[in-house]
Length: 180
Image (cartoon, rainbow, N blue to C red; front, side, top):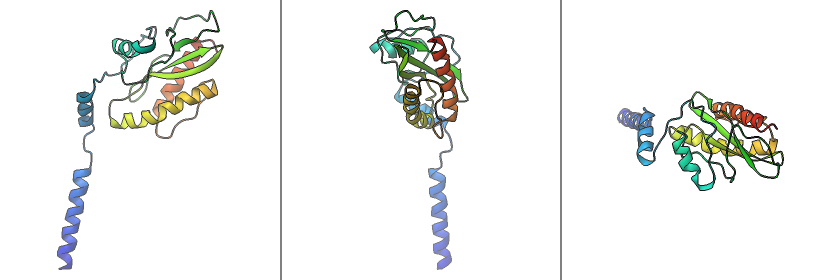
């Protein structure tokens, strides 16, 4: 009798483990694609596109950027060739799109009076639930750290090392464009 109970419990445990194991990550991308429009990130040299206020999402769609990524909140235009003419107006600078193992990362900073007042991502990998989980927690921390540090010397969030590498490189590129 003991052997039968042990066999039944072992079989049940194995079945539960088999059915709960996620065998394919591509099915989550298909489900995500059905619920929202997914654009793939690719190497893009389009860092001179402009976006302002509420048209940021439509600009992101036309520039081949991820429409689910947070966009700039300033009313200035983002331009890689901007020159700092008046320090009292806020200007935005887009860093280079840095290719990471999981996709492109691109950062935009807002500069006013020689200080970084905001940092936002234009592109970040969001191709599956794992990317969404990691980057939805890490990117806000990186944005706050960039404003606090006023440089690209920010701490890494555990589990988001590849995003951190792309973020800091793109952030440094934007800081260089702003001549800070």
